[in-house]
Image (cartoon, rainbow, N blue to C red):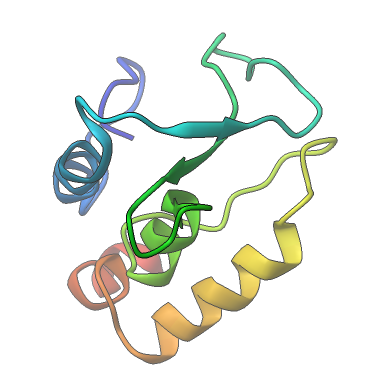
Length: 109
């Protein structure tokens, strides 16, 4: 988290926010809805794809952020379409010490 006033800035939060901006800010993206429109903070819930010439279906941004250790595999029912997939990606990121899994070890215990 970087924006919740009740919570302190989480380890690797700024890096994750900056990477997400780098990937999608100002670009045309494709959004995929699961079940819910918004979360409890009224933030729009969507899976994000960035179409490219090489992959017209798009780079799956949620996948990239979890795979590279910029995000946790956090899923909240009923929005669980990719829950198992994201958990697998997170396990790989943890084993390979990517992103927050390398930089935030003392904060993850």
